Length: 285
Image (spheres, rainbow, N blue to C red):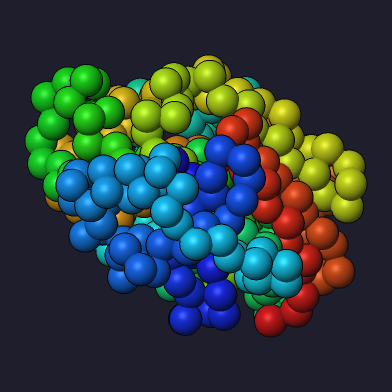
């Protein structure tokens, strides 16, 4: 299933995109698409049955905003330097263990919402990423099979970063990762049954129509199953939590001087095969 949330920010309603590309209303069946729903196999089964029976009302998608596909996100866990080609372009040694950092849940916005360039920013950068959405409480997972069984689905994430804040201003990466609007998510949560191999997904990103990233999750240093298993050794993952799994080569940081960092007025478009497409215009904060 392709689950999404539509409407004005803070007042989104749950919806489903059916196999014919028709937007369907879920508000008569569930209150929202959140951790509680994702952990409820019976409720998901009822939604699937209603969709297959053609019982869900049609929503007029014209002019309707698409919000983040998950509500009530507890935490956004991020994995850094997780593609061989991205590590190479930045001159970093491939890590021996996953590099883990966090984004605050309030950085998450809709896939086509405005991204704000922070005040004082000179190195705002783009990163297309595969987001993993957790569907079952995960603690100390023992195997890759067990890890994947805890995944509700997948989505497109844009891990926007301010590299000067991240690298040159002291401390950890947090200052360059948590600026407002720095995690567009969606358009859909695609349930795990529709993604048979998360290591066979194409990731692409364009800036002002020029392609900058063209990678594949096959190039991940730590595949999705290992990322979920590994993270569960250090923290409890709850239904509705998000893991951003890293970006392939092609970011501004890895390009020759003068590096083409983002500015207000730029337009970024990104997509992952089967998971949908995002488009953001950048404006000053």
